[in-house]
Length: 118
Image (cartoon, rainbow, N blue to C red; front, top):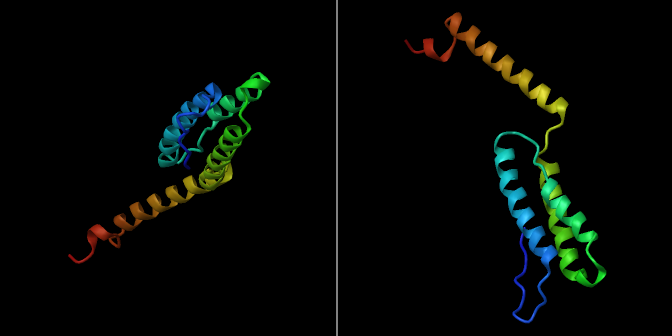
């Protein structure tokens, strides 16, 4: 995800600043969530975008607002790509348990890696 830097003569948009801060926080948390196999949360970004919708009409910048919407969509696409449904999480946990059980059984009967090549 990337953004553009405003020119020196561009008008400051406070909603864009709040959105950028929310996106930075949610993106940092998403990185942690993905590493820990949790679905990323986009709550701050969504809240900032909703607050922007409620801003007075004179404070809206359609080009900057559209850029924010596209960045939000990119974060949603990332979350969708890495998310795991409850069923996928259950199946993954069951598979891990089976692998551990099989490894313990293999070690117990002498066919495991600790007993080979002896």
